[in-house]
Amino acid sequence: MPLEAVLLVLASTVIHAGWNARLHRMDDPAVVIATSYLWVGVVLLPMVVVDPPVEVLGWVFASAAAQAVYLGFLGSAYRDGSLSVTYPIARGTAPLLIGLGGWWLLGETPSIATSVGLVVLTVGILLVAGLGARLREGRAVAMALLTGLGTVGYSLIDARSVDLTGVLGYLSVIMILSSLVVFAVRQPGVERIRASLRPGVLIGVGQGTAYALVLLAFKQAQAGQVAGLRQMSVVLGVILAREALGPRALGGALAVAVGAALVVW
Image 1 (cartoon, rainbow, N blue to C red):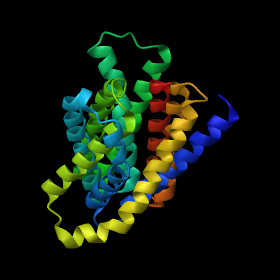
Image 2 (image 1 turned 60 degrees about the vertical axis):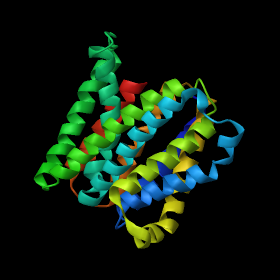
Image 3 (image 1 turned 90 degrees about the vertical axis):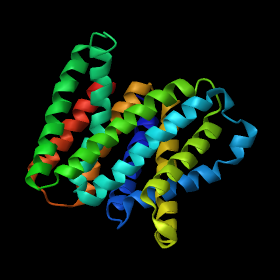
């Protein structure tokens, strides 16, 4: 893997862990992240005029629904639980479900590395979930698991859709629709939305920058290598949280990162 690609991915992981740590400290994380999605979607709106995603309109609504699940449950997890518990579970659930789904549902024979990764990843998630139970954060653990389920949903939909339409126009519509769904469900009111505007812009910049760096890395290295190295954000997130939950939190996060990297490599 070229050194430049490694540096790009590492910069992306720092930013990704950073915006998640910042979001976790917010009083209203679900509304803030929905606002960030809306802001990015509006910025990209001209691309809808240039290349509207009419070819995949049905998938647009499906992806927006999955994204809304991701946004809503991530915000709830961050509101109710520690970042050291919720972030590793939310990040690790998606590769675990994709790896198991490919094995059980599609009949794919996992490689040795994937098999080891699934075991390590499962152990890591159980360690962190057990810590959450001890801290009486069972609700946050459930919300984090559902966040990962939403991630699986929109990832599978988007992987199919982006081959059929323009990426930026597609992304704009999905981000606007999913954020509006969260607003409709949460009904935050004008004052809460207004309070979320500035932090929402900052979170949106972090999201966009991290993803742009990953896209640049994809041009210089294999997708599996990039996706594997990105999992280090799980460990960085726990470090940035500074919650002092002991070695179990860091050990669980490290197991999640290593296991997920082996699964997606």
